[in-house]
Image (cartoon, rainbow, N blue to C red; front, side, top):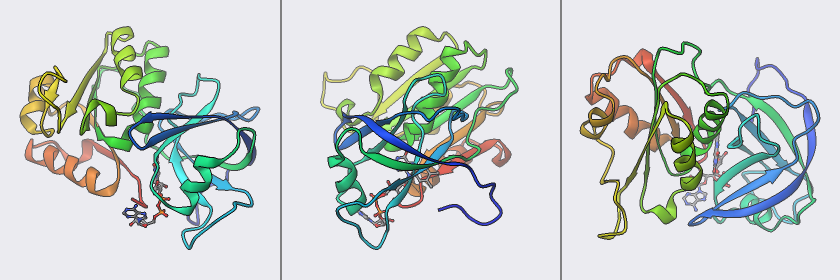
Length: 246
Ligand SMILES: Cc1cc2nc3c(=O)[nH]c(=O)nc-3n(C[C@H](O)[C@H](O)[C@H](O)COP(=O)(O)OP(=O)(O)OC[C@H]3O[C@@H](n4cnc5c(N)ncnc54)[C@H](O)[C@@H]3O)c2cc1C
């Protein structure tokens, strides 16, 4: 997947340790972390299936964000389980199977200036790099003020909901704003509907100062960018990670 001119990273062979359902149609895959492997929260990896039982024209490699944080023991990625050859094989992969890891890549990482707030706007599977960043910021007790707006249809569709609620309890600098678009009455006490500039202003009174992070499929990133443009946010303060392939 990598383009010319990008620094070549070592390639590792790693074993699958665990797989779990984490939301409707969404699974997380835990792999062993290779000796000496280091990455920054928010980066991604290319995973290659070795001798898969089936394949298609899209091939045996996919890039997935590392949803685990650098301090955590395993490498973990999560994906929506669509019906493609790669994902059918991944879903049925026996524990202990070896795959190839080419990583880390990307610069979707938290800015250094502690006094500049960070605002994350994401939805669905776009949460993966954000989980890593917020888990690490919580562990490191970073002073950055972080606000996460996270859109899903219902709580059942919301990957890492429990983790994020726990980070919000542990980290006084982290404000978690889950937003559900299709909730049943009495099922959800939080924000509902779509993320709008009004919801943003409710939690981030000064919309001009933060650095904004948008992640997920290209259409989702475009929608989030539009919300920020409407709210008069400066383009220079918007960083994105587009999940090409969705
Ligand atoms: C930096 C980066 C980080 C990423 N991080 C993640 C991540 O954390 N988690 C994650 O899930 N993905 C992530 N992706 C996207 C990932 O690499 C895959 O492209 C994506 O998961 C789709 O893979 P697939 O096997 O489902 O579809 P593919 O086989 O790759 O599909 C190729 C094309 O076929 C079409 N297609 C296939 N199946 C369907 C379907 N059921 N419905 C509609 N269209 C379809 C789509 O148009 C798609 O463009 C990331 C991508 C990048 C570049």
